[in-house]
Image (cartoon, rainbow, N blue to C red):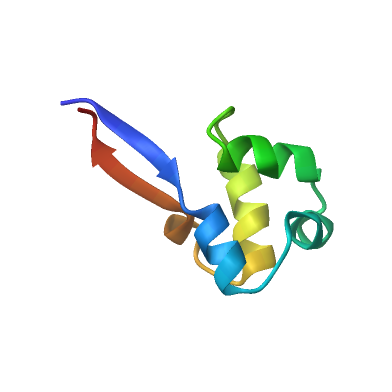
Length: 70
């Protein structure tokens, strides 16, 4: 069974009322990196996800959605 990882970053970021720039500043990463991950252009490393999770005040696993590939 193949599984794909989808990032839940954009949804949580918007719930928190944050722009990409605000999240980037809080997480001390570039807004371009966040944008690329939110748009599926790149995969995030675990340390990167942890930085975003801390900045968003959620558990890291909340930033992932797993589903079977079609």
